[in-house]
Amino acid sequence: MRLAIFDIDGTLTETNSVDSVCFVQAMADAHSVVGMSTNWGAYAHTTDSFITVEILRERFGRPPDDEELSKFQSRFVSLLEEHRAKDAALFAEIGGAGDALARLGREPDWAVAVASGCWRGSGVLKLRAAGLELGDAPAAFAEDGVSREEILRAAVSRACELYRQESFERIVSLGDGLWDVRAARNLGIPFVGVARGARAKKLRRAGASHVIEDFRDYGRLMRCLTEAEVPGQEGLNPPPTQ
Image (cartoon, rainbow, N blue to C red; front, top):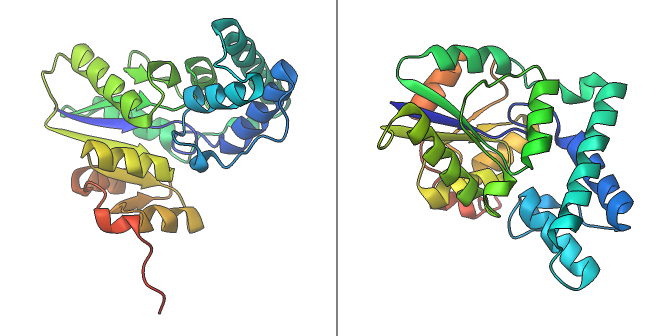
């Protein structure tokens, strides 16, 4: 059996923008943190668990306690709910995502899992708001690790347990960020980028062998899942200027 592991923001749902807006506002509302960097890729790990702790550590001069983390998470999720109620279009699926997940779930030799750097509460909310129901599909979130690699490993472990596999013949990660490419490279697993325009070019320069704009062409998705390679080391450096 083979396993396809999907990120959420920017991969299954068009929620990168609303997620950032709500994250920043929640920090201000819950802990009076303003002026934080939203260059998520500049953090050592692009996960809600790491970024939240880093920002609050700087704010308090010490690691945040569970109550402080919970206060932020609660406000963050409530803001996402408020935005969803005002404008459901902010939580649209990436084109064809729902149909592709349903069809892939029916493939006899493929299994589906989710591995996201967002908190479980916000991740589940965004999937449901986009009309994406994963049922019993295994999933891992920011609670499962501070790094993307840890979260991916947790998703694989849960998939092995659910699908009763000692291991998978092939594991493919799908994501939209440079941090997703890096995690796949570090774990030695094939990667399929989900992006368009300049973002797609960045993923290719970072080493992604296959990049799709969305999931509308199911045949192409399946070809990419079959053909994708582990991101190459040559992608770490930009091409020379001509």
